[in-house]
Length: 120
Image 1: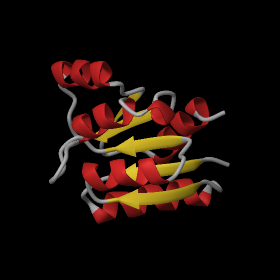
Image 2: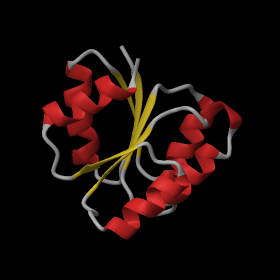
Image 3: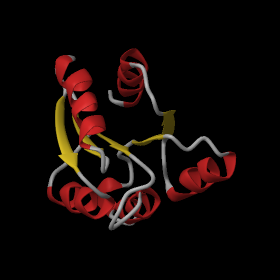
């Protein structure tokens, strides 16, 4: 199964992701903002990162740019899980290096399908 890092300032969203993915056998680590997420990604190898966009300290876009600048993280899939659905923001995310996009609220089966598709 996959090792997944979930980065969101909402404890309830992190808990829901952990419940869904953990229940499917995936190992889930949590971070409460982009700076913490970037630090965790530097310290441990993950198969997938799921991140919010709007967070304190460091937002998801800046975190992705930081991750993509590190040689060991260039190929790790990163999925935005956010309430944002604006096309301009989606283009910024793609330019920063995001692999995919899921709009909140999400369905558990949708999240599982994305993980199955991106993690081999």
